[in-house]
Image (cartoon, rainbow, N blue to C red; front, side, top):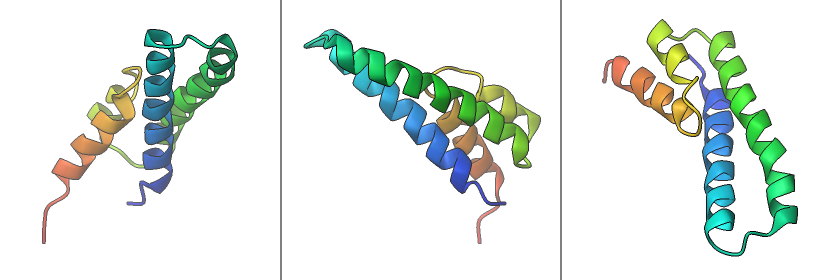
Length: 85
């Protein structure tokens, strides 16, 4: 199962949220927030959409609904479900 796109969307969502929170806690540059807010929202929606397009267990799909880290939690769930060599 190829999870490349889910991995990309999940990391984009998490990193954009991290940058938004660091910006809020430090300089609070409004231009950065207005740029990254929609990027984060699109990455969140892309994570959910990608999870429903690739074959995943229903638990992993539901985990993508958790904002910020849901995609990474889903990837971890799927990774632990795949048997090792």
